[in-house]
Amino acid sequence: MNGVCVPGFDRLLDFMETGWQGNGSEIIYGVWPDFRLAYFNEGWVRFARENGGAPWLMSPECLGRSVLEVTTPELRPFYRELFTRAITTVTARPYSISHEYECSSAEIYRKFAMLLFRLKGGQGLLIANSLVVEMPHTVRGTVPVEPSANSAPYHNEHELVIQCAACRRIRHQQLEGRWDWIPAWVSQPPERTSHGLCDLCMSYYYPAKG
Ligand SMILES: [Zn+2]
Image 1: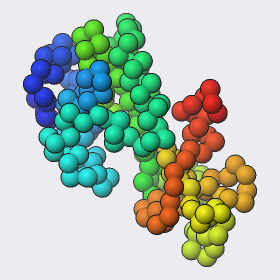
Image 2: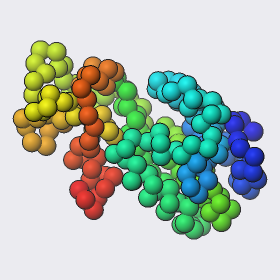
Image 3: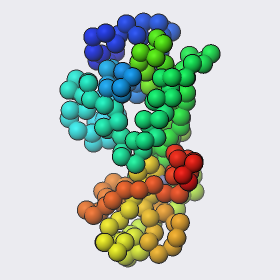
């Protein structure tokens, strides 16, 4: 099997259809019903490396840790609910739930699709992530903002910059509801950066509260 698996979890995977490991570009991991990591593939390691993940994330050391630990706190309640729903939802499809999310770099807009497979009566969950959209932000019509001239509009009363934990836009402190795309701060966030969710991401992840 491609990847690293804890003893016992592999028996939950033997019923998956041939080819579930994809073409090698997918990021695939498996969790127990309490969200502890039980399996990860090469794609997981590659993604962690390319996105500056901590060294323990790329080694078997991460097995047994909750995947919610590596989720941004702002989205933790969402993923806790999504994983719980995927483990408890029985469907006719091979996967129980799908979810799309943005994971962009400074230059490139990226959208991923996550498929959640309920394993053997809910004894575990296999989560497969594949890239569905990749293009430069400018092609999508996103207007990048260069903050170097005057970054004051982005600092709140505590001199903090607020970044959306999901789409990584920066809150404009003087224009209500405006969040700007500042590539330089995606590559290297200012020292005093705090996180929140922009209105659009709030309504996507938490529609009831949005
Ligand atoms: Zn956002």
